[in-house]
Length: 120
Image 1: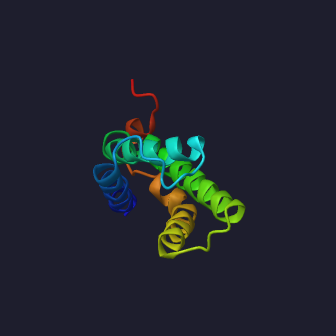
Image 2: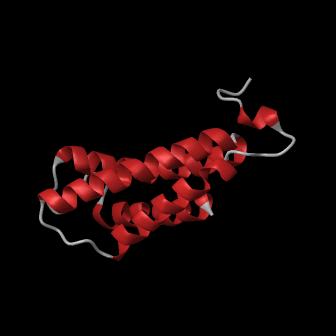
């Protein structure tokens, strides 16, 4: 489920870059926000790869991604007077899902080597 959600997010970010270009300013948002949103185009699929190669690292990166994404988008919405929309609510739902399932996601039975990070 984590990988599917991250792949959906990757598609959304990549389609924005495809339509508007790599240095698009997202309609005039602050440069740090631009850089963060653009970086997710590459960070999200990195987490997907890690989920399959080094699951624990992928799970932790997924948590960092969704926590930071919801934090940045919440800050942006409040400071720029933007109302929450369906994309924001889907991110919030994914954050809640990750928080509720992270303990289970970190357990891979009979394969403790897959939990080592960095890999040996």
